[in-house]
Image (cartoon, rainbow, N blue to C red):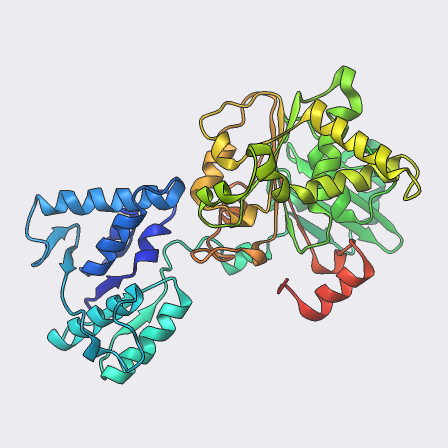
Length: 465
């Protein structure tokens, strides 16, 4: 059945890696000849976002340019053909009488909803589908459509969904239990073993082998399993579980071997702590023969609009300090462990932290990474679930020779009105980048190590923090 999709503004602004025009091909590129209707209010809202930096502004400008090109080809009010359907602009239908009492017609969402009702009343035989990624807007639309007694389907934009059910089950490692005891013995004897059991694994995927009291951890590289032994790392006396051992192996591996490491999982599993420890171990911890020249710390500012950082006081370093405080906390914990525990003089610990930041750590907003070619750097992007797919491409493509990139985050804690666990940049990397040169570890919820309280919070309250 032919449909006419009515697009909300947020669908265009969050349209992924190819610009706002992507949504047109997404809706019109199928086997059915569908149409797209753009409410006039949406065009006016896009105009407000066209000067924004980053992906939102780019998508707004890209969509506006596309509509301008269509304007030159025909009458937008009657519809301009594109691929298998038409693109139509509907400027009318903004009427308070279409809405229930209490719905302000001056609110942009309500104006768009009113236009939808106008279209359904004017063209009752057309199958309209309202597309919005704003949950609140979808709820309000459902109430208003029912009150107006019009039949309009309501959906979210599914074309940008990245993670499938199969992807959700991927952990970056598999567990063989029970594993062949002779396989474990050969791993410890030779350090590697060739086996047909690994044929379905990705390159750089980890394997936990268990057989009763015997166990081993391996990685699948060059068509064979290679044994992993627990390494000595700056400030860490002992890693706490198999997932931490696998993560640390990947973090310490030379960038020529594993240039990208992705660590995901619940709060308290040690993702940022491990990434920080490995970075310091390969820079500050071995100054004379360091693997990297500098550590670069950055993270999403979690304010959705990147320019909102400007409201924080001070220079760039001052603005970023609150955002990288978790990394500073990790360094403090590492130093206390390395220097004898909690009794270490606090002033001395702070002097050491300042020395580490001065000698080997740079703090950069994500916007400042754009356009650079980073050589022999150790890049940590914390809270990576808050970046968009386009930003993930921008960030990863900055790595030049000798650079390792580490992404840390929890896809269940996206703090964006336009993304969720299925559409964020961290999920995009997790799904697209598996294979040779990329190691991934998803920490399970039962491996929370921050504290006993953190563990029971995770068990009883889940991913709501």
